[in-house]
Image (cartoon, rainbow, N blue to C red):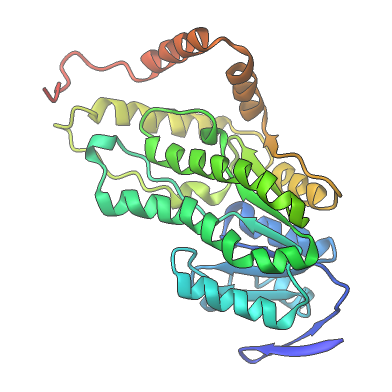
Length: 303
């Protein structure tokens, strides 16, 4: 057993124990994944923005798993914080067994009204955060023949109006991960995309939907979309623990699929995307979108 300190806390570590690092562990799937892997006997490095100051998040888990829960502050858009966490993990453990790139948020708005800084932040968090975390931790993952789970979405393979920026970030994650599969396999590192559908987590709290002024040509569309989201959230019955348990069981396997899709809605969307001819698929989407986003004849045309 080896002792080391982070802040004022001393941890007991077992060299044979597997280590998992989770980004975006302050809420949603990330927070639940921390608890699941601790229950499963792993050492967990939980990371999130200002996490070390937010003692309420793991107040229940902390005393139970005092020797296996490590909480580190990490903003995935800041290279110096990624470097610091990588140096810490590399100095204390033999390597890293599992990296779960879960940090992300949604910036939903019409492209025409998107703010440049927010557009860049959407890509910085969802895509570049995933990319640079993976890049920095690859030496530790290679050392342990580890695996990487990148959280995507049903919007990672299906475009949806007014979510183009979020979709673009997740499509990019999909392309990166698919490319890495062949690149890293010879080095003993596996990658897997997690594609959840709609689940009732605290992800909604991280959505950024700027208010659309009444005179905007997109006002009616945004209003309809907000109503659709609210309506769908009241109907969501899918248990987010299905995703959490699914990721845990995948991590226990010796071989990973490239993609793992969770939720009836996501599986159905993937099914029609894969098997419908493109013209029919687009025709069906046009009909659905037309019904959802029908413009009021009195709305501004923007022309």
